[in-house]
Length: 531
Image 1 (tube, rainbow, N blue to C red):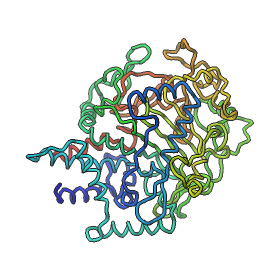
Image 2 (cartoon, rainbow, N blue to C red; image 1 turned 45 degrees about the vertical axis):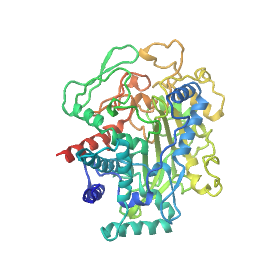
Image 3 (cartoon, one colour; image 1 turned 120 degrees about the vertical axis):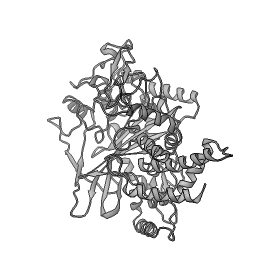
Image 4 (cartoon, helix red, strand yellow; image 1 turned 180 degrees about the vertical axis):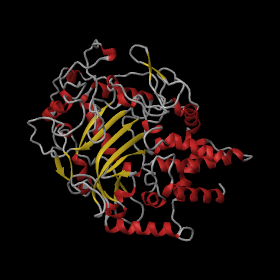
């Protein structure tokens, strides 16, 4: 690849990372050369249960049929995404694996490098490299371009050295290198990071992605989706039109199935320390996710809020704990943030595995935190004792997990789970709760009683699903509607049940929603480079 192209892309990357704003969506997350140079290449996720189609089907059945196995799997996913990664260089600092992953700004810049190489290859007389070989070269080149050369860019080099100095004297500063976006008041929006395998899929499958985007921008009739239960057509109103995809088609916008190592993580933060001129919080919401709390909260419109039970004596807020009681990081300007919510989705099964964690307040070892295992895996590292301080804050999070619309565990469907008494109460209330707050045999598909009498699954994060009624959901019930084209209102009765047959973006809202708009960024880069 010619050095002129590398230099052009590097300059473009620098300016984009510092100042790029696309179509009024707000500033990009931190995707600066200095941060990536310190973090090094993203560390990939190791999927659980093998990589073949047969492994995927076996795992899906096992998780669907066993509440205990599902929760054990959810904790193992969490274990793997928080495995400590030592940052590059001599500085002794650790970051969780997911904070080495790629935000929207970096995916965009990586695609610039890849597409530039691909165009050169196609233009050459003897171009013979495969797409995989070109991506491998682009991946290497992208991370090499993040090397900071004092002769070529002194300001970046000085910032790089300054960051290293900060981290050397304050290792927890390393956590502030990645995973933040535009802020409003004391809360940071939920920035989305993609694992390396998912990043690669977005970059290399760009033709299918752009084709989906072109269909959207051309306008037309609203997308027609087909109900999974009755076959009746249901119109979902998007901001633009899009052709209907084939029944049971997953990921049509990528042109091929996403890899099992694909993971997306959404993070929410609260600012807990800042200079005097900036707003911050001194306490965090203390949600009651035990049986009485779940009943009281869901009895009042199914919206997460504090203190819905008249006899609830729990403090409504808890002073922000120190570094052992919640994951905290420091960023530029003296600001400090605490991680309140983590929403993970892994492509380990056809309909993904949905794992959501939230800060547990003053009851971290109860209900949805009662079965938390030791998070440092001795099978992965022999230094668990030395890593005690690193793992301490991660034990303050509770977890829910689903892998399907319907609950397949016969014990849970009988309403008497007997593992972990404090969690069993909450579990009895969580699957399929209706707005009146009583265990119902759920709103079955097509509003009729299912022949097996099973529940729908349940999972909702109080720090992320804060919109009205969204405590009554199961992640997959909402994400099934993810499509190119824009926003819409999810019907309340569709928050649990499988309502459609086609899944063009493979459940990923960030494909073309929120602030990320991964697909739109890729389409925009291609248009500009083809001009």
